[in-house]
Amino acid sequence: MRNIWGQAARNPRCPETPRLEGKLAVVTGGNAGIGREIARGLAKRGAEVLVAARTEKTAREACESIAKETGSKLSWVPLDLADLASVAKAIGILNERPIDVLVANAGLMPERYATSAQGHELAFAVNTLAHYMLVTQLRERTKRAVILTGDIYARAKDCTPDFHYEGRGGMAYCRSKLGNLWFTLEMRKRHPDFEIVTVHPGVVRSGFGGREPGTGPFFMIDSEAGAQAPLWCATQPVENGAYYHNTMGKMLLDDHDAARNETRARELWETMEKLSAPFVSKES
Image 1 (cartoon, one colour):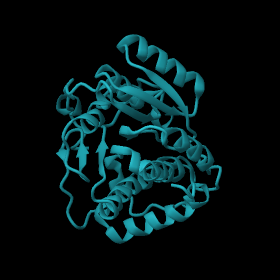
Image 2: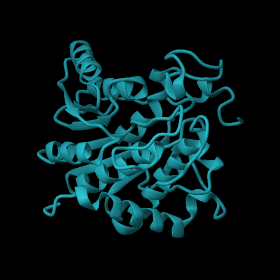
Image 3: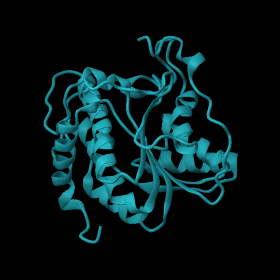
Image 4: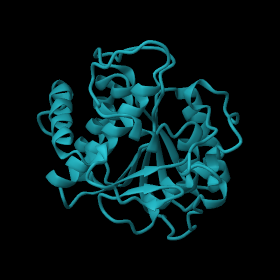
């Protein structure tokens, strides 16, 4: 609560430079909420943007609207993060060109217990596993990956594909956000030259968690403000492997923080490697 109190006044404003003409950006969930504003912000800076999203109608509308406003090129790439077969198809498309920045933005907080096409708990499947597969398989074609997390991860102690719960999936969401931090931690160990950062965008009125877009407690910020910290991490000099917070800046976590658990990070990586293996091309 200390981090979000007065966050509107402390939220960063991403500089409009450097210009990004000739650069290619990919934004998962770039058709709505924070993702749409991230796509818009990158396009305003001159980048070509690929909006990777499940829903064609909203994705095409976002691409057309932002392109008309900014003059940049935007295109839709079909991507259903709840199905690894769809993730594999998207990887095949995205692997055709070098990517300057990949923003792993899309996510969900389930309103009730549900599973993915492969039978994994839905928040884990969408927020963590699918983005792990996407980033690892595009690593050699990508200059920088920005992984959205949430400081609410601090409520969780684990991240697994088989978490069961009753009611709304708040804790499932927390666990998936811890998984994003573990995935980044292990990526830095295995591929130290790959540029990857995690970012908490703020607590945002984006329609997340079953709310109507634009509604929520007074301390929330709107989606345009929520895009600023991710845009900063996508366009400005950053420390490789760092975790950035919209009101706290670069976070320095102590050794007792769950996000620093190297053993669980390695185990999660190995689990996701096995789960995604049937959908990974042998040429990858």
